[in-house]
Length: 251
Length: 102
Image 1 (tube, rainbow over the protein chains, first blue to last red):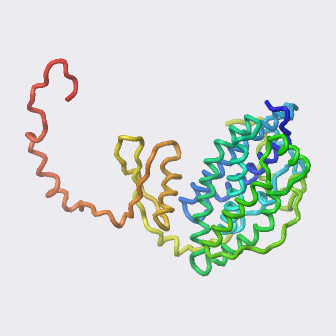
Image 2 (cartoon, chains in turn yellow, orange):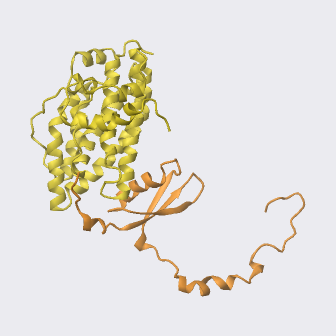
Image 3 (cartoon, rainbow over the protein chains, first blue to last red):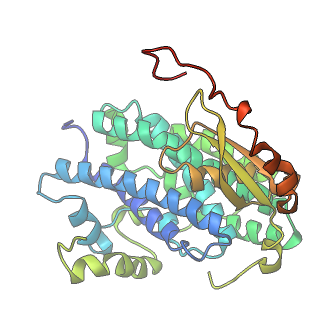
């Protein structure tokens, strides 16, 4: 174990993956096509797998005896450190694919950097997850291209989706003291280095999809400090209800 | 979320037949079919539907409409004449002792 790694940093990564997974899971049985149910379900499960490993690692680093379940199901809203982008309600399919595009493009840069982290556990998780998120990014890209460069209606919805999620992308690259220290220690991925390739990838996809690059200003942030949007409480209620009603339940 | 876009268009998605090669050296085998708007998406859907449990190392997708198949009506003419031609099977040779399989 690497003492230089902040458990809070690992928690942030785990919370992003967990909350994003929960949102994607909502599409199962309601997506546009049976095939897409499975595809989105696969992506959600990949993210859940990442979340489990990351939360377990965070719990070990914290040293207070909390495991992945304790962190996922028995923390309240103010203790969650995910970015707002992940917790936003799904909207329509275009909105969901817009979010998946910007988020998986971010995760691709994140895990590429983390695969050389000085924390060996983080490096191992990242190396495995990189293949997964490359596929997520590809899946989102394919849909953004087809819907953006599709019918008038699909184009309108795809543009609306991108415009809606864009203000929340800035938080992905927001630095604070903790992150700066972790970057300095060689543990964390540096947002300054991640942003340009992220921007290049997303911009290229939007251009190919004949979509306009949004000009929206950044949304108010705060997810890393436990300040969330009003949609977060509903998500947690659904996600945590069973575990809290029946603590320790197994099947 | 409550919106249900493209209900009619969804039915227009063509059917694709999926072939998966389970490992190097084996042939691609038909595993099933799925709907997808185009070939690229068909490949991705096939990856998600048919290789979730490491079933494959290669996938082919073929538009179902492009497959020319024998008709059940022609079954007799196509296949029955082979039924009584046992000399086409290599069953008239003595297998040398100690050889289990030929």
